[in-house]
Length: 399
Image (cartoon, rainbow, N blue to C red; front, side, top):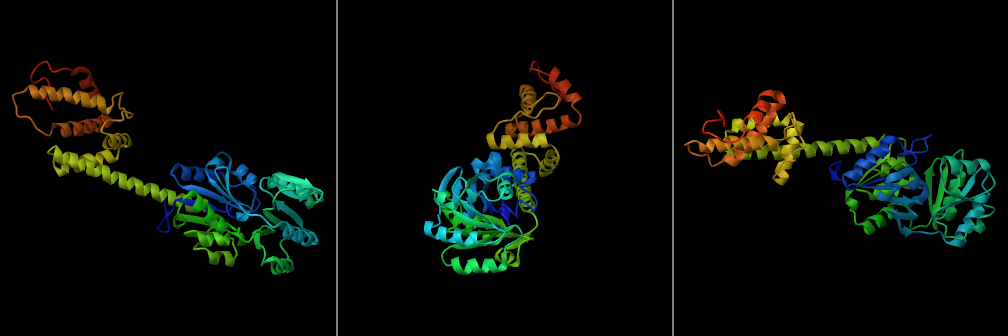
């Protein structure tokens, strides 16, 4: 698959604001169909999000075990269920940050572990939001000091949007020690400096062996910038800020539309290439059979209009035998060829000079008769049911 003249073997996409539109909690059904088609064609897909891994796995459903994940804004990298890379916040630094975050009015906190998100039991509405709408795996605590595992990411959620003053304060105080990123929808994330979606994508490509020069990425928020800059081709959503748009190569309205167009174009190019190969094959067979170029041209023009005959021709070209899946009135190309051989045996009984290109001539004749049978099968069915054996010279009036 090619996008902007670049061969693409891996697609990487953010979710919230990119695949999951405002007001929705999961991607559209159109998205799942696109991912399945990508995988069917051998193109990898990576879900890159600030969300936790269990949440992303739930969203992806049946394809989750076939793709890669950049979760928690790059703090956790998973490929087909295997954790490949993990970044953690230093415990003392995390505790210091949490104390500052607790002082923020009308905001909620979240600490991400590898398999669960930790929140406090202070706001039932926030608990409901995460568990039933966002569909996170959560653990409710009395105090964050109860967390025993490593912290991958610490987040603060402002339901009414991130206050500018608060963002500046946290960036100034923690920006030199942590990666501070706006994740969209009122979330401000704090992660280890070595995390981030861009670094995670590099780690994933190194460990799984795919080429970064053949990747395309989609995103809409500040936490996507490093990923957009790392991929060979990148798209910012039209709803993104100017900062994000300037970090990408192009802007789009819909991820699925970009991918569908690329897949359709690839399919068309493959079909055109395949048809040229088969057309050249018919011309070659015709030359070997001693037929004219005009004969080959007319036969090929007729074959192009028959999907069933083309499928049989493609199979014969690749394997040297008929697929015998396509039938007209119950007869396959193999049946027609056997009938043709009977004709040829009768021809051999005549005291006439043989045509040394008989094999190619018989093959072309079988295709020609199948095409004629598509238009009017009756006379050929009658012939094949009555003309058998080579009992006497001249039995068959036509070769």
